[in-house]
Image (tube, rainbow, N blue to C red):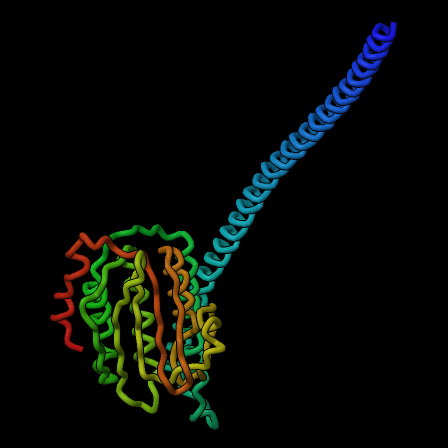
Length: 316
């Protein structure tokens, strides 16, 4: 009897334990289902956020592209307007210069005005304005001119530039040193010659105390780039203006030096179009170091890297 009672109690305890475990299992299962539901809800919210973000990114990219196109069209329109304005203004200026010359040659000043040079001043002002407009036209064309990239021989480009500058070189007694070998670059030939013309022309112009200009040109290897240096011992400039000098119509020096302040702006725009950069280092009275970087020509092209014979025929 006692054994039966113990067995009954054990069975009851086991049943209660099983009921308890079943309840716990149900509670755990319910909790797990709730957690899975929360996770699915979180994943759905996350996916919705991703979809919204992607949609926003697509919309933003479209808006940026549209605004970029609008801005480019506006810039192109303004450049076109300015180009035609500059072109149309040249005609009356040339007429002013021509009629002023006729007045000088055909009419004598009246009594009391023998020493006046008003017609000559009008003519000089008209010619200066015409040259200024021509520089503007040149600058404006750079935004539309086609550029072709070639593996270039710097020696030939420099030789062509030095021949073009020969009158200024001979007039100033300049000494120009080209350090060989010259590394090759990938650039547009005519545009690079124009860059050299402005850089070397400035080095010849801004000379200290009427001394013969001393100019040095050399190249530097920068892995995938070639840096070209143009160094002079001229009047220099304050380094705080190292960025400003590349702006249009920016002149740091007084009127004793000819020019309209657009040459370096042309240099920057040309170099930028050829995927390069330009900069300058200087101190007042210590000369200037102008540099440009351009994509390097392949080293396998020995003609580009080693051919500097064109310079041998140019005596500077």
